[in-house]
Image (cartoon, rainbow over all chains, first blue to last red; front, side):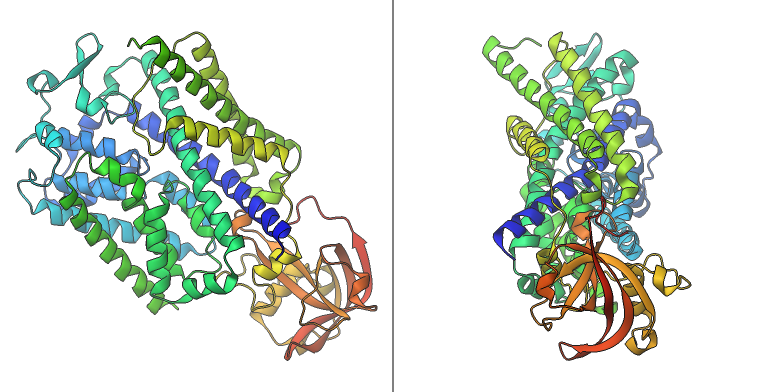
Length: 335
Length: 251
């Protein structure tokens, strides 16, 4: 293929990924902003089961209430921990919410509607992995060695901390009269916590600000991700792509690395994976779709605000191994 | 929340760039719709989603511009991977490129690069809609390829009338009187478009039929041996140049 043709088809591909993905990004950002601002998560926390396995599963399914991608889930998980949800619930939510939510499921369906097994297995694998990791971490009764000192300061030990924030230490902003907001929580949240206490008139501008910041951040990442997908499709020789994409093991490893490095938002990562659908094994596409939302470079910085590095290494190791084995099984079973 | 004047000025400038970025993307979506370019990029099922997104993005930009002009926006702390101003400029520059450089439909080079002729697609060749009862002369190129997917014996179709449209691809391994008539099939966006094609035996050397030109080919099905393989081939009686369709992808 000559250079002009390469450029033209790469450019068309790049724009097509953006034009297909941006509406889903917009929808995801709007919906997650609406729910973050209009749903009182403290009521949900009170309903969470205390049993480790049931809690992990319930946490994994909470994405339906908070359809956040992997940038929004960390602040929410932080708030959940601070409000005293069991570790299993918070871990399940942290790992599964970016995938197990209506927008991401719909986007995956749009991208892979002629391979519905990809959609079903993505949900199933994510649920199983998030639940297993949540249950494993709940065995650790005292989370203090795993959490950052700042988190330990705000995580209540033993019982839910639904009492007034004034009983906890730390720095506070006086956001609304009589509504102090913890600085260590505010620093990572897009909107002040407990927004359900704000008036509607105050919440709408917050929604607009939140939407714009998320679109700027995620839109930028989406552009970079689409650029990489377009370049790989047109510039890398087909033989090389087929060589990497068709081996049952190497294809899974390649896509796991790509998923962790590329840090594309889970709302639109299915479209990115689509660019590889013709040349990569189904198991490897799943590896990208399952691992990417749980483990990526972009999220490490955010996760380090909750966990110490040692805990993150444990989490990533379990997630990566389970993803690898599940996806390899798919390749060996259905190829 | 009070800010130092210099920081405030920088922050407001950055917010204006973001507003411009979102507004430009809104305009881009709406102009692609009005200029008929959406069909080059995505499946028609998703046109409404793209158009509505264009209106919403434009609306968000207008609302935020009004608030910024009235200084009603307060800085909000938000952790991000790269500096927000980089992201805003990336969005602005990409939208401007989209507005000024027209995307082109995929051509014969892309078809070959994407595997036309090497067993079609490796993993995505499942028919989504198939009408077996369509009379042969009304079948599209894609219908023929899907028919072949299901029952691949070329002799079964010998003598049937054909009337199909597509663009010309000149595979290097084919003789001088044969080309491939091809189309791209789209299921979601151009990223997943894959080429399908049928060999055409021409009445004249293929240099008379330049690659990438669109043709309507009328003729009859025959079986020919090309590249050492028996293949269903169209014996062309008429090869008429046609303009490229508004929506070049088959669905």
